[in-house]
Image (cartoon, rainbow, N blue to C red; front, top):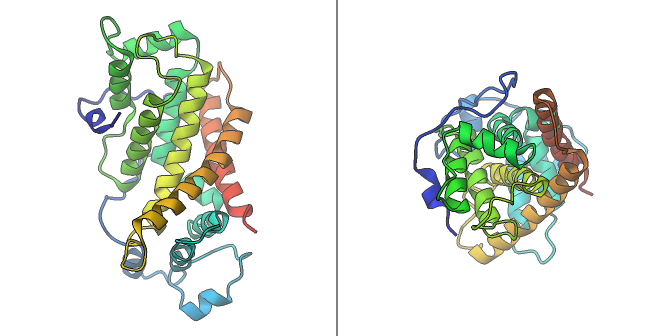
Length: 280
C-alpha cells in the first residue's frame, strides 16, 4: 500500500530513553545543491579544482563533494556499476565514517525509538504502544501501525529529519508488503519484526541521505530514468547487505536504554566504516 496516509495526525511523546544524548539536526530543508552550499561556506577544503581532484587517490582520508557526485554520475548506465566506490567516496566526502555516523542524529534517534518500542515480549510491546494513546480494540493491524508511524516520525522540517521521516515511511511500506504483516493478528510483535524494522530503517536512512547528497540533479537529457533507477536499486541492495549482517550480529532482546544508545551509535558507525573501506 502507499504511505501518504501515514503523514497525518498529531505527534505523541518521544519514545527514546531519557538518557539518549542525540540532538536534533538544525539544518533547514531547502533546495540548495551541494556545490552551492560549499561556495557559500567558503571552505577551501570542500571545493577542489578538477586537477586537484584527479590527483587524489582512493586512499585519501577526504574526498570532495564534487568528486563524490561525479563518481555517482559516472556509474549511471553501466551494466556493472561500482556501487562500492560510490559508497566509499560519499562516506569520505562526509568526513569519514565516524563523522558520517555522528551527523546521523535524527535517523539514530528514530532507530533508537524503534528498538525501545518493539523490544520485549508481546505484552510488553502492547503496553508500551497503549501508553502512547494508541487504541487496539476494534482496529486492524495496519491502522495500529499507521498510528505507530505517526509517533515514530520526527515531524520536523530540517533536512536530516525529513530524510529520517522518508526512510521511516519507506520502511513501513516495506513492512506492509512483507510476509510479516498480518492484518488480522498482532502476533507479528516478534523479534523478527524488530530486526526487520531496524534493518530496513537503517538501510533506508543511509540510502536516502546518500541520494540527497550526491544524486540531486542527475536527471538530464543524457541520462534516462531507467538507468538512474537501476543504479539506485543496486546501491540500495549493497547498503542493505552491509546493514543486515550487522543488525543480525548485534541486536538482541532485553536491551537496556544504555545498550540501545550504544547499539545504534555502533551500528551506524560500523555500516559507514564498511562503506568507506570495502571498495576496491
